[in-house]
Image 1 (cartoon, rainbow, N blue to C red):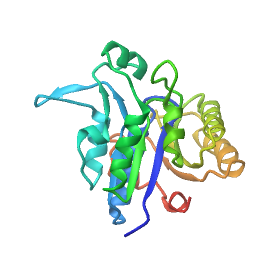
Image 2: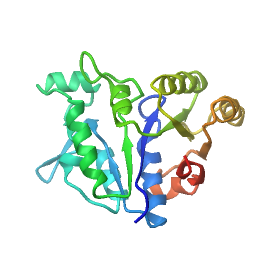
Image 3: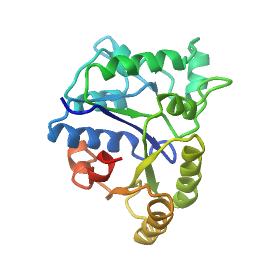
Length: 233
């Protein structure tokens, strides 16, 4: 039995590739023979399929996992409204409780060797009047993987997010540069600037640079990731 591992995947913003990177990580881990599962504690935006409310991110994580669990464990909070979690929860008369999320996570640790926990939006998305996704990450106390959406403004967003992660006494286990748009001016220069500040100054290794993918799939993105540094963290 391998020692269990878990990572929290966050991003510099919403719609920058957290799910793509999370599923790519799961695909790579499964290929290495690990019993792996993805968890999305909070998801906003759902569609009815076959009489069940479903979220695209949750379905993608489930498809990339080789360990199965109930929807209540892998996604304890699913909101129909595609809005910030605290707004969606209020509109749907629900309350996001971190204790519930932690209990679901602990149950998953008994079933899988590796758990990839994907956050929602950016690092500090509100859950209620007093708690946010950073509080969830802090209570889970997992090494963090930062997905940087490579577009104008990404350096500032990445450095501020990295500082927020470290301020919570969490380990920044690595970061992934994901091309969030088809073309970005001075892409390599931006990656180099981030590598100097995140990898050299903050000791967070670059786990991969994912180019713009016309068909972004876990299999396609996994080819650009190097998990060796992450697994040693």
